[in-house]
Amino acid sequence: MDSPLVQNQHDDTADDVENASDDRVVLTEEDNKRIRHKTDRVILALLVWVYFLQILDKTVLGFAAIFGLREDNHLTGNQYSVVGVIAPVAQLAWQPFSSVLIVKVPHRILMPTLVFGWGVAQICMPACHSFTGLLVDRFFLGLFEAGCLPLFSIITGKWYRRSEQPVRVAAWYGTNGLATIFAALLSYGIGHIKGSVFAPWQWIFLMTGIMTIITVPFIYWKLDDDVSSARFLTPKERAQAHERLRANQTGASSRDLKWSQVWEAFADIKTYLFIGMALANNLGAQVTTTFGPLILSGLGFDQYRTTLLNIPFGVIQYAVILATAWAAVKMRWKSVTLLLMLIPILAGLVLLYILPRDKSHTPGLLVGYYFLAFIFGCNTMIVSWILANTGGQTKRSAMMSLYNAAASIGNVVGPLLFSEVDAPAYLPGLRSTMAVFTAMVGIVILQAANLFLLNKKQMRTRVQNGKPAQIHDHSMEDEYVDIRADNVGGIGGRAFEDLTDRENDEFVFVY
Image (cartoon, rainbow, N blue to C red; front, top):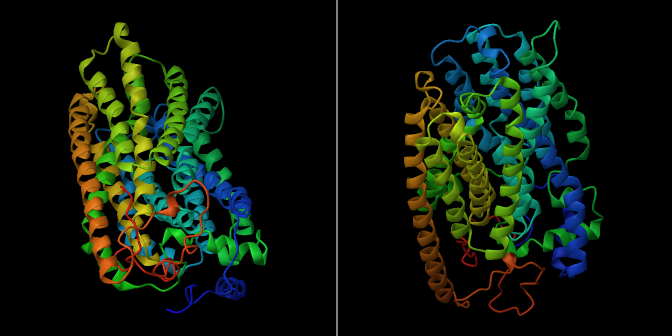
């Protein structure tokens, strides 16, 4: 491709950006900051709010369980576990379609459609009065939520430099903690409603569903598909916004579904290592998502105190996710940051496993439970690590869909590790979870070594192509740097072609 812009743009503003790119766009650090700030106010704000709603709509299941959902729907045995896993099953089944939709459908259309779908499913939950009804409703909830994380990841990669991505991923993924806090406060307040036509658990789903549905028109109004069609930027700023992403070397937005990039994703060793991390981490995440409130109630607290005790957990979640992103940006070693996150997780699981369930050990048990908040910092790190090491629009979409599929498998299997017969300690489930996170330590180390070797291979390829062996990765700098300033070997000239990380010899892997 000769043009730095990808073909098939469906907006007239694409011509403005292409012409500006040909004329060598001038971009200062002041311009860089201004455009980033504008993008944060529109795109990031939308991502944060919508992801908050998605997490909230999933999180309230655990709180509804302690306010009568299981009793009113006559759930027995492992039926609650099955209800907890049916949404991830739907997500897993829908991932191939999600990866196609993310590439082919404009994001301004796709996102509000998904939000409306899961909002309707959420608002229908109060009408369920049986195991079958819950199963069907939660299946559709998972179906519409299936594309959420891959879509948000792709959007983040489209609009931000690689050095900016960990903090932005943390900003929207960090709403895991905020949703936990809000869900706890909402459930606590609704739990005190007496004599209503609806049970407390029904009110919980009804109110969160309404919040979701009324957001849909706002999403369509504010969201733009990509930099070249950004209505909140001037034509000059659109060209500058495009230029500031050159150092990413991850290509431009494209509506072409390239099967060669899909096959490359499946043939790439790092794909399976990232899948292993996603699977392991989300297996463990179910300790908190589905069974967190039940584990707390097993410590002897009533339903109201159990609900309130999840508020500190949400605060820790949010703080950990932001701290993880900050550490990754400052250290630039994503693998080391991820390994550091696994230490408190394993410590928390050990505490929950070895301490007896009696009042004298309640403080230690709470500390162990709160340590599990670091699980959510790991997910942030894995997502940003994938984005930083994947080029090509179709390949990025495929990678994030595979990540979400692995996460869905983890979400399916995770609750099944915790059987009601093992309540309230759930020791077999905790033992299995410890083994999973121990294995994850090894996977992270293997991925770091793999990316190191891939960089060595890229260096040899550049030398063969007449380019410098060493390329400084300016996309990881705190401030904007024009990678074409020295014009050594034409570096950066193919940055906006839709090339994968393996096709672009200028791509630098981040480990």
